[in-house]
Image (cartoon, rainbow over all chains, first blue to last red):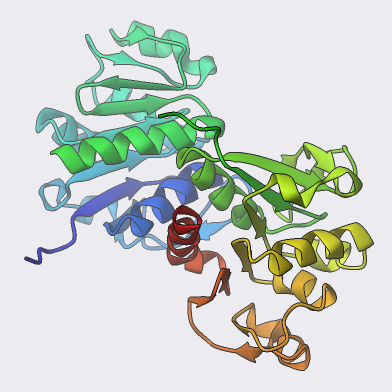
Length: 173
Length: 173
């Protein structure tokens, strides 16, 4: 029996944390997922360390219903795109439909702005802990925190257990 | 039944290609391997994009017999360390004992200098193709080339199938 490959969306903004984009990107490709990238426009987006990534779509063209999961890398990208209404609506759609969402580092800033963290158990980069708490979440200092289908992590070194959990959840949904 | 985690060695030199270190590093950690890094000294080694990695050992202290596999990232690192006798002997030891070896991009420069490519079927970054051929190998333009336990690839975008094959071979040895 064959089936279409499942699709994952990664959303990035300028000065994303390069490894936090590329590790999940390559990892999910390795696992057989079709991974697509959305950004502020069709122009290449540059990471903090200078890697450039050309988005497949701009945010306004994304239909979240086409995807089985969402990845939000950290760095300075999330702050740069969190005020974009399309970005908020994308994040809100995945959370409301209880699809798997993986966010790391400053990635949860987008979940704050989407208004979807109340009552959730999450982690993030330490520097935004207070913002996560003020958004109504319980903040936990662990390498990876799983709350239903939401999988959060703090820093690049947390990525191995973060992706392991995210893939387990994708496989089970 | 429990067993000790299997150990993988990654060897790096200055200006290694950052993603070609971090993808296999995190990927093998995710898979449960104990991953150790060797470099020219105990001082942090800086990648082309500025990420810094502190080696666990300097090359002269490495005992290849302790490891189950070897990874050689690319970038400018391999050229910077290929004349080091310890590096050549490490690579030679893995190849002679037929342990899994994964090399990417300019990584095969180390295999050239170790004198272990004659008669092997490999790929590499296009820019060193002629050197690989002059070292006696058959060069193939494919994302990943497997010859017995030697797994080679060309560029960062080849990493998903490269690591998939390397892990398959590790699991089967």
